[in-house]
Length: 167
Image (cartoon, rainbow, N blue to C red):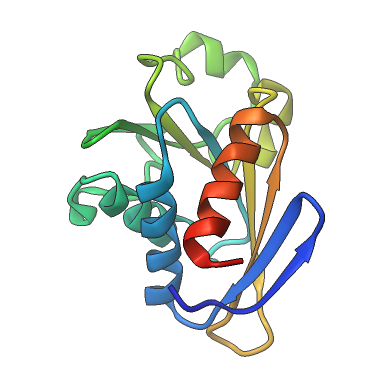
């Protein structure tokens, strides 16, 4: 992983990738760091690389990345690798009660949960999560990724990622 422009803002961390492959690789490195039970929220406009990132994440968990597609219409896709991965997409959801009705956040304790468009239903999210925001970077293929942990598991995850990255 060779993101450019890594900066430190206390507990938050920001990096920039310069291609879809680097975004994928960033997800792969994160997947390799995960121990199980982490909740990752992925937000950003359409086309920012959220699903590409999750494909890399899956690869880091030992899941064939070509098995990972956007769950926009299915809402949840489950995958089994070194750890189970629940890939969710809140894009089409409008009622916070749908999360409970559909048991979307349920899984065995070691399940890694990755939620695209999590900001649509913020009151339904677990308190301990690693929020990952994708925004356009300086060049057309750049993605600025901002990582914000909100609890001890998320903080541990971000520290592990940064240690692997060397920052």
